[in-house]
Length: 159
Image (tube, rainbow, N blue to C red):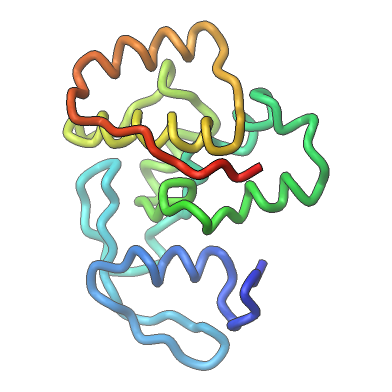
């Protein structure tokens, strides 16, 4: 979707926001060139086609954590959340596909240095949207967060 009617859809907006080397944008938000950093695997990606836009908290996980009770409009807002840079992230397609719909109990970024950021962002997205954590997920988050001494959980509620 193109929420701000500037010709760029959500994927393109995330790509433009997260580029570490700015791409060229032509016509109807056609993106060429540029470089992105996939923090999950600490990899620079020189082609937007090698990236997926990851719902940090996957859509299926959101559904199971409370989104099933939302209206279609709320679910659309969640799926296209550009109001917090942590909700949607440009990552290598390989990492995103290995993650699929798993939570931090089942999947963690390949780069060990990304773990605290990932746990912080997971917690922010869940909190921002008022989503629950099942007991296994909560236990994993608590255990993993023990090693994250500088994490700061700040957010503006989305709902």
